[in-house]
Length: 265
Image (tube, rainbow, N blue to C red; front, side):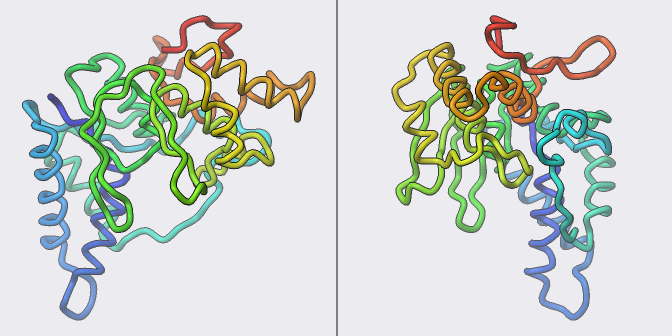
């Protein structure tokens, strides 16, 4: 089993953890940050039973989703980076097998690799979006976020409404369709306006097949967009879909509505 590790998450998590845990005046030493990083990666490999060295993934500078988003600019947010952000990035590139491709996010690259080898790899991240991808998954505990897996996600997956009814938890294709309804606030993806977790769960809870889930979501979009429903759903789906394969030139194969492309796996 080969861990596919989300290094985008790690350089933020470890960088800020080093600042929070540093007991001396000033900024934390890089040796301390590197030790935290090594401990995290070693722990991930131990929990998932790694039998091959991990591959770490970083996001490139450009992103194909910027050109797709017309309703709301994609990932329009600015946040502080930890002190050792660049140092941790350089360290990972020097020590580990790090993969990065311009135009694609780390999420896409992990999804592509897992699609090629679903029984030999395990996606390791705290990012819930990747749980729509079939195959093995692991997410480590951090703060209020519980651990996830290691667990195998099948193609259709399942949905669960949180106890406080404020969010949807899930995996597989049905989770992707739930995101088409609720959107993703973190990535500035609006989804279907006015459709929160409870409504999305009600729309999808009785669907059992990819076709049923798609038709339920499209019907909800028609209630808002009428004749423009397919166009609106296509945009949201292409923003949310984790890339599974690329064209010979390296550009992503985009998600298409099932009535245009039968096989979405």
